[in-house]
Image 1 (cartoon, rainbow, N blue to C red):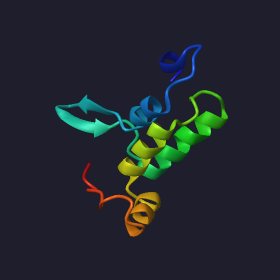
Image 2 (cartoon, helix red, strand yellow):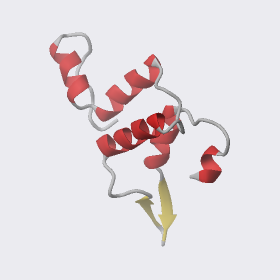
Image 3 (spheres, rainbow, N blue to C red):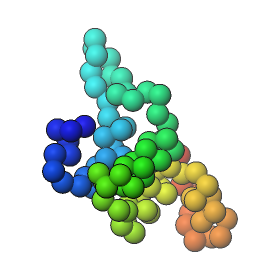
Length: 90
């Protein structure tokens, strides 16, 4: 991670997608962090914001996270009729 950040703050989306990264191992693709689900990846990235390693979320980052997590926030917006139901496979 030190090589990834050096002396600058990482954009939130870039950090979150880093935790979702995959690698080739023995002709198969594996997650680098298989123990982390989407919500844990978000929470870890949010913790890194508090640690001043990652930039604070922009409104675009927040909407992207809501879409990709497709959890409570998306469900609430769907219930209010503000967004159409999300496809959980995206």
